Amino acid sequence: MPTYDTMRCHLETERLILRPWAESDAEEFRDLLSERGDGAPTVERTRTSIAELLAATETTGFALLPIQRREEGDFIGYCGLIIGRSTVEEPEIAYELFQRAHGRGYATEAARAVLDAAVATGRKRLWSTVGAWNTPSLRVLEKLGFERDHVSTEDSGEVVWLTRSLP
Image (tube, rainbow, N blue to C red; front, side, top):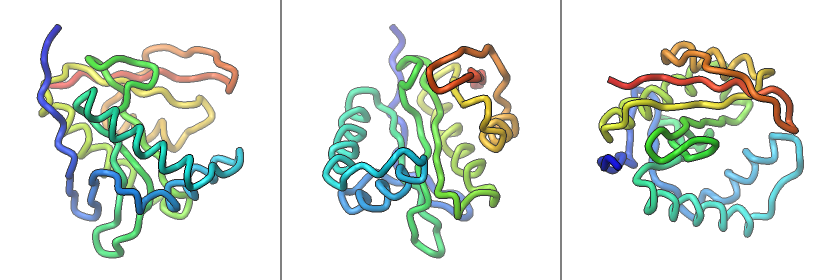
């Protein structure tokens, strides 16, 4: 099995800072998750999720990172690499932003930084899985050079699988 370098966990772009999780992110993370429309987890459950994300980083060498706007300093979502429906060798890129942050190019900007960080680990390919209904997310991935691989059907509906080879 090939070995990979550890992904950098502090990434900066023109407008954004991606950094490791802190326990103080729990309330805002919970608020973000509640925008999905299926209720809000407790702050305690969200703290547990943060601890699980940090533990996963220790195991996999890559991370899902909170996104802060550089000037405002506010938490607007997360972006990073996860195993998700994929593998350690070919992880998934994942992102989710508060609705108030949609339509400003933040997801593309954050995902581009994560893509560069993934290349630096030595990986050769990334995946992403997105609900077929999620046109904005599919557009972000298209801008980043991801291509449709196949579609699967899950309880939540159709899922589009996209992939991108890394240099």
